[in-house]
Length: 311
Image 1 (cartoon, rainbow, N blue to C red):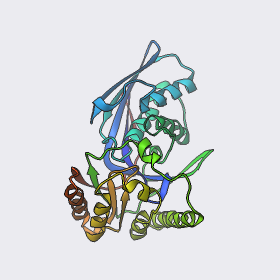
Image 2 (cartoon, helix red, strand yellow):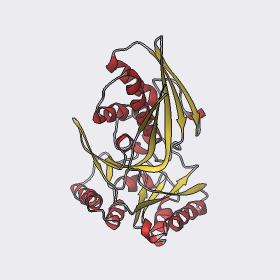
Image 3 (tube, rainbow, N blue to C red):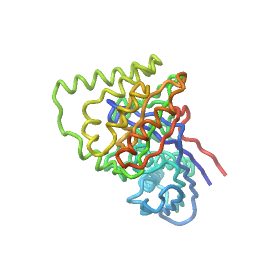
């Protein structure tokens, strides 16, 4: 029996659509894998909103990952996969990625596949097709690696891990009744942008990377607030988001944006200032003024990604 746990994540971080994410010390999914005689994949789900998750391997994130690993192994065995959901679904915190990452690590170990970290990320990214219709790695990469993960290239896949600044903290407002699928949130994005918008987006993304590399929390916050393409397109999906972002800045946040596909709002704070909970509560209040049920959370980046245990 192999057990793997993978953390929640926040992707895009403002201007870094599909190319950057960070692991969060917030929640994790646990996947238990057993290999038995026979053939096929059996999936069981428990925990947070388990009834909403399809059990068919063709429609389940973990199922797609397991099928790919069985193909790579060339094995005919029965995989029993139990997913214990801890990362909330449909709120922009990498729920499907956590399941995909934990499954990739656990199944690879159970089958005796000696895969590199990059190969694990590639396999896990294919599981994202079940939730978004697209294989993307900006959530699975930090879920597997921990810290910040930067996608340098998709073809061929190339990923770099960056260490978060020690005083970086996040305040989050997590709406509970504004859920959208990642696929729907991608559908509202523009199919083309102007040269001017492209240049501004590259400048914002460069600012984000420089902030991380220099350990400059204020620069990270400024960059995460500067997206004018993806955030603008998705803001209309989530009543209260813009008010929550404004409330975060007024309360002292260094920046704020949508976490992943949303609707969670993630604000950048400096732990030394001791105002993270004030900011989180300000965002929660802004959402609730719009009639949106919401919870406030404070967390740090998680240095460690997926962890594997064996029984």
